[in-house]
Image (spheres, rainbow, N blue to C red):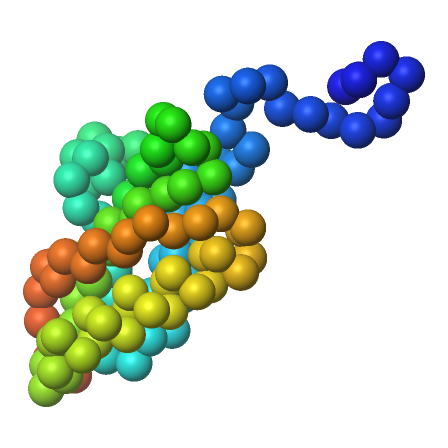
Length: 127
């Protein structure tokens, strides 16, 4: 806090939002996209889950840029419903995730990389 002030100013280099917070917005946006059946943990998140460590924003990885902490790159790991046109679903995920994360967090999204990890039939859907 500033001396005598009541405003909090983060120290230089201190993140104003956690990766988990941003990942949750991205995950919600991806799951609301038509054609997405689920999100699957990718990379480090999958490894953490295998060890029993809870991971926020399952199926999403958030990368902050060192030179600009208001700029992020997102990696989304969706499972797509069988019969969906994969490139169209991936494009829709990119657009929706970018728009929602920018709108709700105030961050700038440099890129949304969609890594389709599987296809699910309707018969496999949980009841």
